[in-house]
Image 1 (cartoon, rainbow, N blue to C red):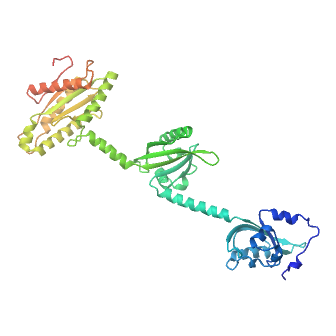
Image 2 (cartoon, rainbow, N blue to C red):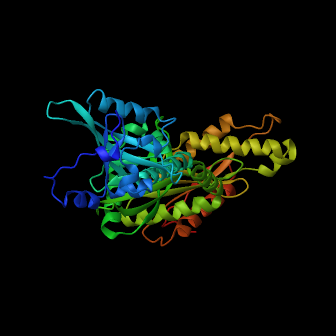
Length: 434
């Protein structure tokens, strides 16, 4: 039988300040009888309902909250009032007085008489509507950020000051060769080759110590072993508790890097023969000349000119002449060492730079190429035409101050070979007469 407001028990022993204390608690505190009618409500409950206590006591909760579609709330009350359970859970209530939909964290437990029989329910609720809104907003923002980071065409990661990854987006995880969920908490040395991990860590330490961002190019092998290149920007960051970390954003520039290398190669390569062009040959030769002088090691140069090349073009055509040049360059390359350099320095002129090689060994190599040229290099379009070449050989001397000195001597040796009838090798030592 429902309890009426006049039936609410009064406890003479209750301290006069008890209700005043409950009115100061930052929580919604109330009690009901077994039928779900209010038997007590503190100040916060009354303000929420918009009624004084006398208008609330004895009234069913459903008169103040819309429970028509809230079966879970009814089920919770049933578990407390009928089954005697204590329930802690999140609840959503529609306040009839204001039309607001609010969220609470509620703790409900049964009230019992001296015999243990359930007489009602005690409820304590905390309004977490704003917290839920903020949580939902954070969750939404986190999902949005995750979607952006996973779809941005870059590797994004975060590492702490102990070399452990705190975060990696999908692209970073793929580059590391592990699922995203297996990245956080692991050391960089567990996910990368030790040498590369140490190189990255050295840069991270400088960033953490200086507090300055670093923008640089970095290289990392992918899962297939192919070296990929990235433009990386790494910045220092501190968490709200002051824990230092670094955040990196690396954009894959492999195609740009390879294009740059290809353009550099093309700029240094003769387009017809595929060997070094005059500019790149002389640049490398200057460097080798300086190294030879510094370390006192021998350096030789062979200057070459294909004999009567104009006749080849006139008799067989320029396409045939081009084939002769390509074939000659290819044959030279095939007999040289990796450290040697062959370059096309003019129309039918070539040079071969031979580090760590004295003049006699250079002379022997020139003779080998000359003899092979006689045997194997001919203009197929005009079999009667014999293709030969003249060679001039010189080696660096103590008197040489620049590469041009060596080059000039090799060129004079080539002139001697042509004067002496072509198809021969002339050698000019530093102490020989010009």
